[in-house]
Image 1 (tube, rainbow, N blue to C red):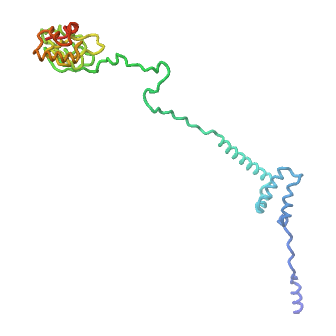
Image 2 (spheres, one colour):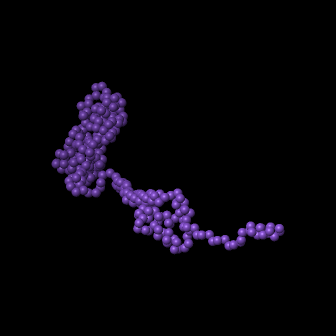
Image 3 (cartoon, rainbow, N blue to C red):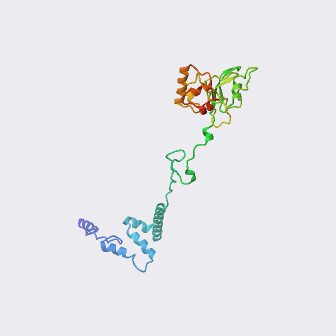
Length: 287
């Protein structure tokens, strides 16, 4: 009975044998030859060009990705992806080329700043280049103000300041006007005032006191002031026509020797003065 049990136990045990080699899985890489064969399956002339292109892209993917694309992504998907990538590359290239070809805005040049302000000092050709002398009117223009000493028989004698071009009558008004019964015949009320002059109202001119010359260009002249031969200086004598520094000194020497002149005709006794010179001086000097 034990034998039978042992036999039965022996019969139940399967015989130990080497496990059979598992067959190779289709699609596994077995070497370079298999890879070449796998790639070559897409190069057949019978396949469309799109299928060959998608197959070539699929063959270059990793094994796991190939397995995933084989079950989820079809060849049409791969082709569409390739087209999208190509369009993206083309668009990027076009954007890069267009960006480089776009002209950069050029800033307008700043206007040149002249080194010298004011009118140009360089000579120019043409009639305008001829320098013109200042006009006589500009040189003879009256000062902006004149200061005059109004003395004599006026209500408010003293220094008055008037605008340039004022007349004697304006100076009289500024001094309060002449007093009653004052003869103004000796004054030229329309004469233009000279800056710094003394205006005597109702008084005879002081002998030997020269008056300032009227402004140049004025059409009116003031009364002639006679030069007193007995008190005149060399400078005053030098202003007389025909009398220079030498003749003026001769007059002073004669006066020092004889005391004083008693008449204008005594000028003939001075060296350098003749009848012609005396005729020119007769209305300009006094004693």
